[in-house]
Length: 145
Image 1 (cartoon, one colour):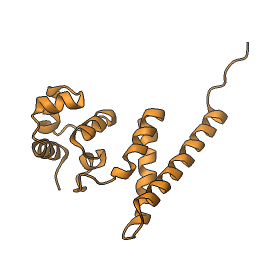
Image 2 (cartoon, rainbow, N blue to C red):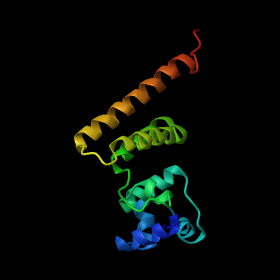
Image 3 (tube, helix red, strand yellow):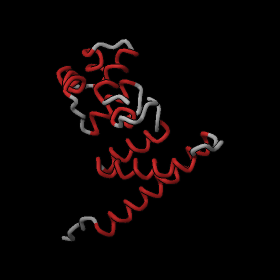
Image 4 (tube, one colour):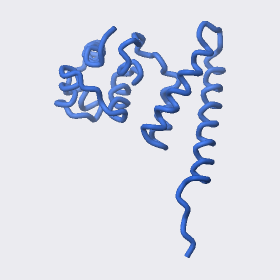
């Protein structure tokens, strides 16, 4: 099991990127990249996503020491990022938890990628519908003038 910094260094080397090149590709400062690699600092979710995208891996691979497959969770990455952009970090973690818990349904089965994608879309749609309904019910009310 590799820690975050070790995974970052190894993947950067696999892609033949210097720290400066990764910095430019991810839009993160070079000193920050150095800190992640040497000090064991873990980035905030938005920075983690940028690094994962630049390194062509999933955020889950980078942040979880026990995950050894760089593409682990790739099919749900789009949905998680969509939730992060739309609702923020807390809700994206909720979506990630929801999708990873349901991904266990596919373990060891022969389900096509289209079927998995359809399932993830349905789960994501249900989550967004619930969030929108809650926002309408419990969100801020506009004042009538």
